[in-house]
Length: 375
Image 1 (cartoon, rainbow, N blue to C red):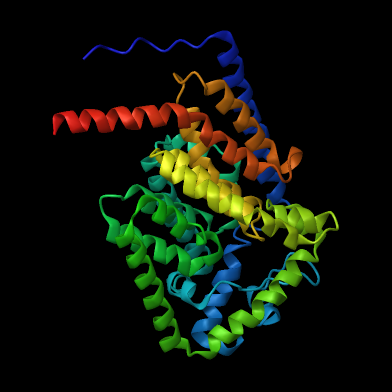
Image 2: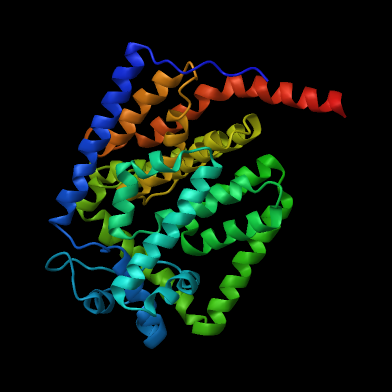
């Protein structure tokens, strides 16, 4: 095997590398600013309180005021802190209420973060570069579920040779944030992964039946009734909608009807279908799936930017790729998105993956041809 020549970066790339690290350092300062405004684990406290309520007084699970009081540390007067996840998510949240609050928070961030880094590594992303992304630090500080969702989806996408396990992972993810799994069936259909589809469906059905047996059917009606109240709470708060990253929220924050964003649904479906049919690259697939989901779902906040961190890190690690400068420029937009580009992330994320498609299509064809010759 011929040794690869040593990597030499021309001046332009060296400047871009330095600019990237300086930008990452500057953006990371936001975590220190956030620490002055809210305590660590502010988002973790919502589902911690919900799980506590489910174990003691399930009839009040979707009582926004009750869960706010239970947390004991609202962000300010009149700021409700509700539990809004489906009943099935309680099976994952409840174990973290057994130790003390801060122990549970550290375990949550540590375990879900490890899962996320594992999924990122399978997508080809250097773990240390993923951890440098400011959006990853934001998720860790807030204690959000983004690590868990991203890890489950990336692992599910990577486990093509273990379709049942992959389907179970997708089913678990759907039991936590079903709105973020709307396009996964399209991706699996495009690949013909029928066993994964079946396993995901059975996993979701089993978790729904288990939640019904434990808490009764009324809890589902309570959840459905809470959803419009939660939407009203979010989309009537300009501060929250400005931190959202979806076209729906962008329309609402500018005084337009958010429902117009649903016109993007056919494009989101087509992008996932065409992308999964055209490329086998896990990085591309993850970026397409997460980007199209953000286009489609009404509600996704700035902490969901961490879902794109593995893909961004994987692209940046391809220093020998002639398209690297494009990846670096797109990464600058990704890192600066919270300040400069409030609604451009979905388009940015989707634009990054097709940069590789022509080359990947040729590589895939050559790999298949070589395999057929060996066979």
